[in-house]
Length: 468
Ligand SMILES: Cc1cc2nc3c(=O)[nH]c(=O)nc-3n(C[C@H](O)[C@H](O)[C@H](O)COP(=O)(O)OP(=O)(O)OC[C@H]3O[C@@H](n4cnc5c(N)ncnc54)[C@H](O)[C@@H]3O)c2cc1C
Image (tube, rainbow, N blue to C red):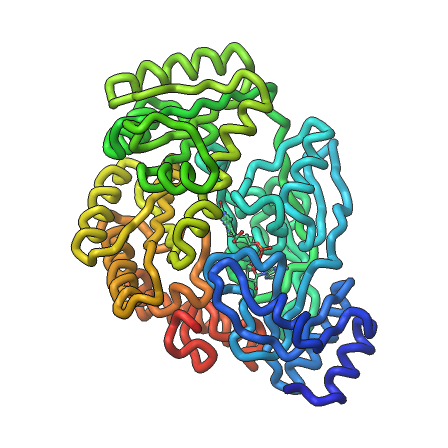
């Protein structure tokens, strides 16, 4: 536990109402979407970057670990206080500071909720594409720190493609800015890109300069049911080969459909064993042509039914099916590991076949869904932890899934990050030399290993890898 003296110093930095040591409050900040839990000693809610500087200076002086936290929706344990210490929440840094319509740029604080920002810019005919399925609660700071993706990233790119600059409090408690409000800039190293996806280990993001696009005139959403997962996977490759990049190309396999059906009462024919949700956006006339062309390309691949949304309400209803997947899987089977491998798009059918073989080999149920258009498959290993041996089976299956993705030229994580969940598997993907290159950056910027220790790379804060 931290001393009374330190708690009182924290209170003098951020105000006494913004520091909590009550156990009930600390429990609320002890977990994320991995459902692992570590109790912090204290939770602080700073309201300005200078306050964050003071917290980090104090933490360095006293060698207290600091764990940055947005909404705590992460899937890799990035925000978890694995060694107690301070959880630093960005909830109060929640202002949209500027939406600059002349330059198509916005400046925001990190605690702004993703969907709230999207709605604000859309009111002005502007568009911020990155749309993690958690957008109703995830924060833009968390999105930058994880380099979040989402369905629309297949056409528009991921979070880092929209970040022009940052204000960051360094691990030792100074403020720096990176990049800025220009479309180009090549002076010095690209620290903005380094910080995007750094999982709160290299600095605390306190301000974000974001590139915006004009809002497309219209969009059209279609939900296509296939009689086999192979047909749906081949449809993904066929659409891309047909030189069409839809806004989204989401897929769900048969077991995912069964879980959503069970949890939400979704009505789909029994013979549907895979779903693609395909959305296109742009000028109205262009959309009709694209939808017709997509329908023609996928017709021979076992289409059972096609539902095309004609209103925004119908489109939202189709998307609601996709957004309900995570909760539905959790409802049907509370113990699941959600991995998010990414393979070259053309390898999606082969990867799905590999996953099926892994499920059979280890005797575990695996459910697949995700952003097939950019090869990013959410592989969910469903187990019952209460049954002896299930956890070990799941761990072996996960390792094989990662190895399978790497054999196909892919990566272990397309968007969820490493956190503690994948730290033990890093040597599968990153060579010792490249890992040392990365660790030397961390050591140089955070000599006392104060900021989010034990994340991405194993250390004494995370010796076993996966946490509790
Ligand atoms: C139902 C559900 C669906 C999801 N769908 C997607 C999806 O489609 N795509 C996707 O990419 N992810 C998805 N996620 C994962 C998660 O929502 C994202 O990783 C999101 O970006 C995390 O944002 P957050 O505000 O919750 O961050 P947190 O979980 O609080 O933190 C995530 C990481 O960012 C760090 N961090 C947070 N704020 C800052 C800051 N200001 N400065 C520095 N570091 C910071 C933390 O230390 C931690 O390492 C989903 C999660 C859930 C529960």
